[in-house]
Amino acid sequence: MTKHASTGKDGTLKKSYKAEISSRIASGLAGFNPNDLNDTYYVPRAETELPGDLSDSEKLTKLLFPKIDDWKQELASDAGDHEYMIACKHFLQEVLPWLSKILVQDFVWWDGKYPQNDAVMLLRRRLNSNECRALVGRPDWNPSTWALQQRRRVGEVVNELQRSKKRQRIDGIELDRGTVSERLTRMENKFSEIVHQVRTSISELSYVASYVTNL
Image (cartoon, rainbow, N blue to C red):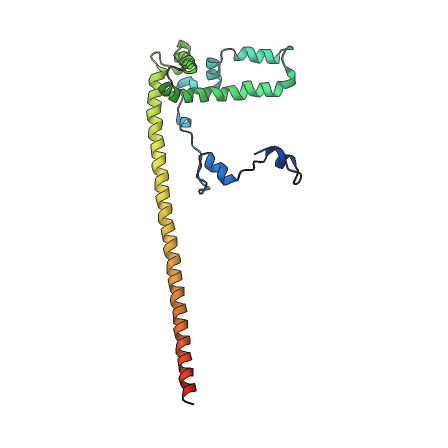
C-alpha cells in the first residue's frame, strides 16, 4: 500500500501513512462486501471495446492530445525540465495513454447522462472528426450511436455477472445450510449420548439406594 516501511511504533508508516480505520470498514466504504474476502472490484466501462485503431494507445493519445509529440520534444530539448524528467516521461508515455482509453470508455456513459456537458461535447467533437473515423475504419461511424450500443452490450455483461454472483451466493447459502445441518446432527448425537449416560447413572444410583434401604 505504501513505499514507506515502519521502523517501530513511531515509524513513518504508522505516523503518516497507515490508516487508522479498520480494513473491514475501509472495504465497506469502498463498495466491497466486508464479510466476503473474495469479493472483487468490477468497473463496467472496462468491458467497453474500442473499435479499429482506437485500441492503439499511441494513435488514440494523439487523437485526444494532438500536441503530445510537441510536449515530448520539449521535454527532450535543452530547455526541458530535466529536474522532473522521470515524472514527465512517465506522464507522457504512461499516464496520458491510459487516460485516453479511460476517457473514451467513460464517454460511453457520459454521452448518455451528460450530453450537454462542455467536456463531453469537446470529447464528442474529437471522436466525431474525420481523423477519428479514419482510425475506426468507418466513414459513417458516429460516436453517440456507438456509445449507445456499448451501453446496451455492457449492460448485458453486467447483468450476467450479477446473476452469476447471485447464484454463487445461493450456492454459498446452500453450503452453509449443509454445514449447519451437519453440526446439528453431531450436536443431537452428542446430546443423545449425554442423556443415555445420565439415565444410566440414575439407574445405578436407584439400585444403590434400594440396596442401602434393604440393609
